[in-house]
Length: 294
Image (cartoon, rainbow, N blue to C red; front, side, top):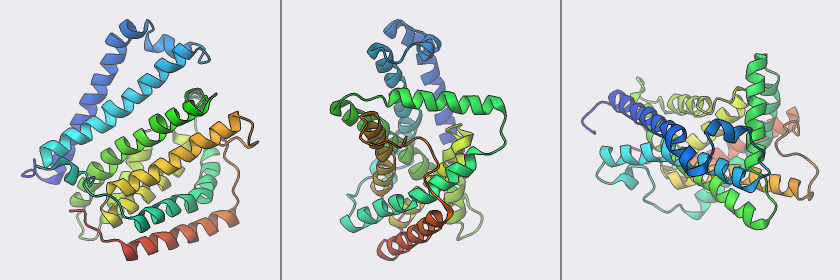
């Protein structure tokens, strides 16, 4: 694989992505009804308060994460390099200080991200697109229904940690790496990081949360680029996802009153302060870390 130019490698990788997506789709259409007794279309219309229905919905989401994102990245890495973990930048344990800085970057960015979500919500989109967003939000709420601490731990694993590993391997280790190599200018890494963040957000097909996801993707891309360690962007991604899961649990347990899925908690002053502090932590990380991505 290394003998091919980055642009051709990118085409091959996108082929992997499409192929595994089709494989997942065929599984849902052909195999899943025999396993569950439901078609995927019937499953989406059933009452999610039924444990069996919710369990199968979670199964389809977990399989989507593993098959569509993780498997293409792992197989591509195996073909692209003799040491796949090294190619994915997962062969080194993260150091303590960079790990703390990665967490601080994500936490500091939350008010800025929230304000961007407020702005994104008022975009003039079609009624159909807005209805699709409402359906996606309802599905997320259903998946994150929790009535016990053990369910919380399971959701953190399946909907915070696992997606973080799969999506970071896919978008940062492979897509961003190839994007950087394809840049026509020598110092085009930041453009490549932004393009990857745009793709990262676009592939979720949720246009009323497009901007905050671009910001998140850009920050994760910077963390990976500055450190060359995927575990740090996985950690930051997991913290971002996991925080939402924990807050939903607290909300459902009536331990907090604010719905964590509702934007509108930030103002311009908080967002500007968030931008400054986030930039400061990125600068500190840049000073301490060595960019080792090849």
